Length: 297
Image 1: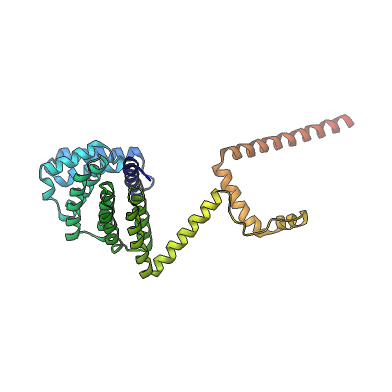
Image 2: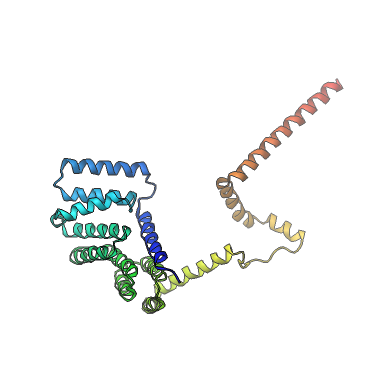
């Protein structure tokens, strides 16, 4: 069973992983630093504009959620009362970001307060995605505080906010990871009870979850070296030759071989070496043939 320190570390890792998933694909560190610089410049030009101050805090959070500068900007936003000048949804986003910063700074009680304020704002003006994200965050904080039953309740609420089957499955996985690292087995049992009741009333999600589960089991077998064969191995050379002549076999083999050559530098190097040796062989054959013809004259 995990210690409290291990549980908290896992919850931190889950939140950091979520931030990485949300980051725009293909964006570079230079681009993120440039966004911070632009946001900081806008804030300096209009220091009374709390919306721009929130943009700066968000820019810090996208690059590095644990950056203390992000927490400092959020504290400025809260301390000046500037958060109250924002639109209701933006207030919720500010409290949500502040709650994450506090959690990553190991201030869990304060994080809970900020996230609960975000929940109030999102109930008044927000969408399913924001509310679902907020409940997931509350789930993590309740786990960190050892309040597993309340964490399970957050999952139950968040499941009602899912817009597609992938949302609910990812939500369950996130909750499972969080609660599995608490010190109470009963918490995990409650979580599973909520999940399987949900699946019983949502057949499409149940089918997709079972497919994911089967895929996961198959991958585990594959990596463990215990993958089940779907096709019998050839028993003699004649059967091997028949498979070599089968075009369907090459349709599967060639794309995999090309992809392997692209991604494996050692294999690519061996192929280049083989190409050079073959070219050298051709040159030698030509030279020997030319010398033989010249000697015969």
